Image 1 (spheres, rainbow, N blue to C red):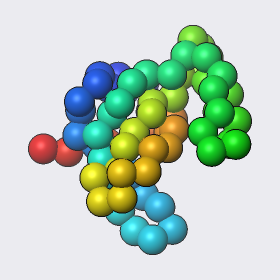
Image 2 (image 1 turned 60 degrees about the horizontal axis):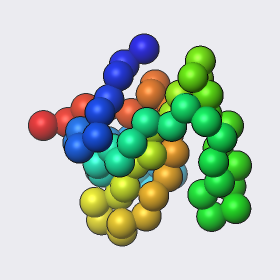
Image 3 (image 1 turned 180 degrees about the vertical axis):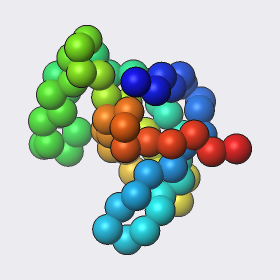
Length: 69
């Protein structure tokens, strides 16, 4: 599993195309983002990322993210 850390520049695919953003933190417990439940855990972590374009925050599984330079 790929590991990311706070500040890493990443990209992911969305229905509108590629989105670029920055890792805010690793999630290892359940949280809610805009009423959406994120079922992260120590065994299945997710990453909170912030879009460079819109500033919106979202949670993504490590497999959905890729590092960019």
